[in-house]
Image (tube, rainbow, N blue to C red; front, side, top):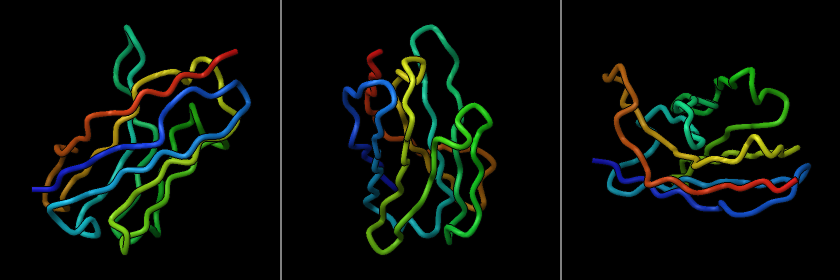
Length: 119
């Protein structure tokens, strides 16, 4: 079973940049499709970005397209979320998640990291 740990969250001013990292242990991350989600208080969880096992294909939600980028370094067992042009409405808990190729849902989750954007 893969364990995921997010890092890199914190307080950033509007317009600033932040990079989140998600490091896996227990399994080789290259066998998992990865995703980043976020959940703001009182709102549903939102899928932001996904990346395939090799990193050759990505999906970015329209709500953050042009500002967010997902990437991975399988040698480091780490997935990244680069966030530019931060807005106060980006304030949320950000989660990384993993899905095996044989699974239909993302069923491995990190504990989340808080990101707060000040105006």
